Length: 340
Image (cartoon, rainbow, N blue to C red):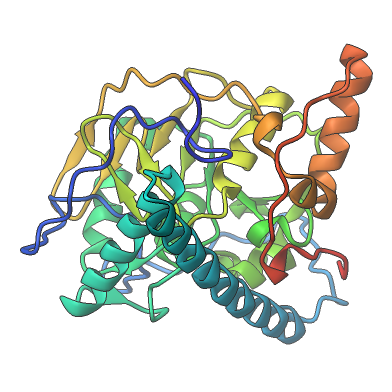
C-alpha cells in the first residue's frame, strides 16, 4: 500500500471526523505528559561519572531553538495553507490537504474548548493538553513501560513527563535532537547525571547538555518507542504528527541500526494509545516501516540532514546500488542545519 505521507505509517482509512462536542475519547492526541509536581518526586540519584560540558551555553542553545522553531511553525503554516488551497482549486482529494485540515480542526478545537496547555498556541506543534498527567500515569502503568530498560521519547513539551518517568525509573532515555538539528540522538542515563539535574535533563536544553551523542554505529537496544501525535485513529493506530515527518525518519534510522524491530511497541499510536481517560490496544494490522522510504524523501531534506546523507551512503556502499530520490519540496527554515 502506498504511503500517504513521505515517511508516515500508511493510513488504511481517513481519520474519523472530529465531533463538535469533543472529548479526549473522540481523537487521541499524544501520550503522556505535562510536568506535575503533586504526582512525582524530583530527587535524583548521585552522579556516576558524567562530566557536564562546561563549554555548553544553555541560554544560547535555547534562544536559537526557540527562534528556529518559530520560523518552522510559520513555514509549516504556509505549507498547510498552500496544500489546502491547491487541492480545493484542483478539486482533488490530495491526502496532504485533508491531513492538514484534520490537524487544523484538532488545534482549533483544543484552543476553543480550553483544553490546550503551554506552549501556546498549540498550532503546528505536538499539542500539550488538559489531563496529560493522567495519560502519563496510564503509560507508566503499562507492563511494556515498566519492563523497558531503554525508552525512546520525542523531545516535544507534552512528552516531558514521559522523559521524567523514564529517568526516575532508572531507565535509559533515548531522545532525538529537535528536528535532528544538532545531530542525531542523545542517550541519558539517570545514574550518570549530576545530582539534582533530572528535571533539567528532561528538557531539550538538558538533553543536549547532559546527553551522550550517538551515531549510526551505536549498539543500543530500544525496548519501547513513545511518539507524540496530533490525531490518532483508535481503530487502526494510524496517526498524524505535526507534518514534518521526523518521527518516521528516526524510526527508519533505528531500524537500520538494528535497535528496533517489528516487535518493538510504539505508544501513542500504532500499537497502544494512551489518553487521559483510557488505554487503547489497537491490535493494528498495519505493517510497520522496515526503514526509510527513500523514494519519498526529497533531495532538499536529504541535503540538509547530515545523518540521512551518511545513512544513504552506507546503504549504497553495502548494496552496491543507488537509492531512489523523491520529488523536490520547499523546506522550513529549521531544516538548515549547520551551526552545531
